[in-house]
Length: 453
Image 1 (cartoon, rainbow, N blue to C red):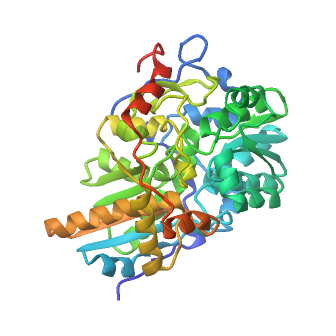
Image 2: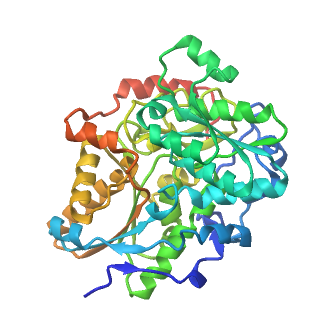
């Protein structure tokens, strides 16, 4: 029988992160200062991030060493298993082999600790006392809460209000790890108070929560901001996943034809795919597919432009696919994918046709997730279900074409604290939602007048 699980020994865990910026075939546009419109320098980011992380953000070194203190914490759950979805293959009845990297085995149940641990370590080493952040579905907030507890840091999390209400168990996880979790928009910041004055029932967005977290940071010299996606150093830390996957596939003599992941800000998709992107840049024949929600389709229907990462326009201007920083997404259950923009690295790769983006509605994704649970047993996070929907599509295409394919995807987290979302789906309360064109055009007006990449 072919192996169903492939493990690495602890001694085989990657000891360096991979930086795709060293291998980009074309240069990326630089981030711009929100005030001057000029390329930002490291000092411009110093009030928000510690300098040791800023150095990683701007680095073009191909390999960056993972500190021993970070590796020690990684070994609590890493290396994660590479699994073959044999039962799902049989259900699909297609000429495919489906492998997935199980990132749900981490203590918070997702891929997010790969960067949370690293960021907490670097902030501690820099002498920071408290981290402030935002979270959508709560995966990032819970991961950073755990990491801060491990390194003796305080943690404050601004959680998008609709997710705060939909997902109380994520909030409880954060509190268990010692964090202060606040629904956003809140009355704790000027940004939050302004938005609540305009719309007291505002469901919140990641852009709003980012504004609150940054404001909370810059008013305290002992605090720094921590972001769970989008930025270069975050994607860098996640590559341990893809590097492990390459080692595991090599052990069984397999190489994927297709790599799939879900995308909100870009971190979990980047973590698995960027080592394979390097292979593609160097001539490997491989398809790399990003799966996003139809309700928040930044890559498939957004504009490639300079935009702010937050609603109140305090972040640097980033070159990315965006729906506009004023966009407030529909309250779908895949809260981790409800972000108006996409990581500059991933946006650049889509623009250069190195990776492909597709959008899936929530009915299609939950249908795929339930079918996965009834064959493979694991209940996936609503975000992960987008990747599974893409896998189903690729398997059906292989069947139609009569071609054998190897598919690898990132099982980015479990859905055991997202069961209310499954209840809504199983009881017929979820509806298909495609973002109307007029809403996109209205939201994109917020970037008119900003510089062009």
